[in-house]
Length: 537
Image (tube, rainbow, N blue to C red; front, side, top):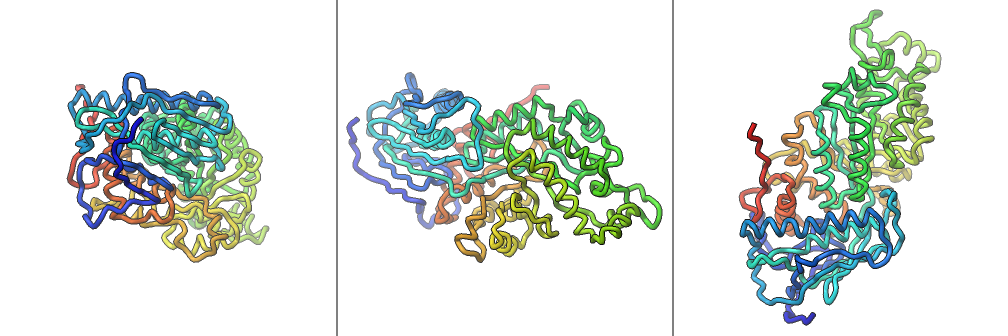
């Protein structure tokens, strides 16, 4: 292909857009900008045409079903959306007029052989390299990096006034800043349907998240359908027929995520937040007392009965067979010590052991940790467990309280691994550019050496479903989580709100174009608007 344009646009680490403020505009540029911003991105304004009649991906060496599925998925994303836009007569308003030769295929080179059953890991290599010139190439060490590269390549393509798909002569070198980039969804306060969970995994792939933290049960309902303990969901779910996740449902979610390089880490929060468990498992919870009489209320799991640990051993063994990731989240927040301290049986045990309530919690977690260590390489707990002295070298502490800088400083100084969530509660929203507060948070913004900061494994955007269900799940998460995604993926220097805003608008329209109902960032429009399914019933 002969390059006819010689005007260069250099984009290294981040793009500066000038002092235009936070005004929304449609995607009108002839050079597009990926989200999250790659480590290095260089593009010319000279472009090539995608041959939509013959375009395809081709593995040059190692391949597997994971890669083949990705080829099929991204060919549909690139060509399918273009067909819709051509049918509607929509364009992106590109000012480019020079036509280069056609791109008919993208060669994909994966250096490490991949197998059909491979799963993303905590140490997966997600780095990749893209070159678009005389030939289009995506190169990666592992299949997971190739998938991130395919996503970026799909974002480099745009459509001109004549309906043609174009890609600029480009070079991308990229890798994530953090290996853990998660989104938590609570499916207990409101049941979230499987199709919405799958659609959110699509959005996560687009924004390069790699962990779905599934807070599957809580006080209010128990939608996990256990084969060994069916009464847990029969009596603890909102509806045992319609508001449960069957084994088939869970396998579908896990597999859908796996094929997108997304791990599914399940959370069974204990010993608190377990009221729904007690409906189907007699004598599991602590009876609360007023004086010397039960008051009809229940508190956390009873930590002194051996039947408790026999039950948890069996439950977690079943969970371990179903959820194949090496990590499990076992909760540990908001434990009601008052109920424990009111119960005569527990008070007598504490007296005999010379325990305080905090020490009783430590006793409980030591037993639970011994159970899950036989099933999982790592476990995650909320910072409350650390605050109460639950210390374990194999545990990752998820920090969520507002004074996070001091907590992470102490944790990392003691060489404990951490995940940050404090800044990124997605249900704590407003209607005025609230993405900015998420974008301005950085996991390294605490007093500590670089050696200490290496213990920060990443971060997680959390969505608690108290006021969230299928009607507003996606519009609440997106594009707010996109801001979190860039801070967790891109270089620490990519932190300018003004520079990010036009790219975030572009990414919002990209999600809408793919059928993801992301909330708008202000007045404006996308060339292809979201079309909500309309029921005629």
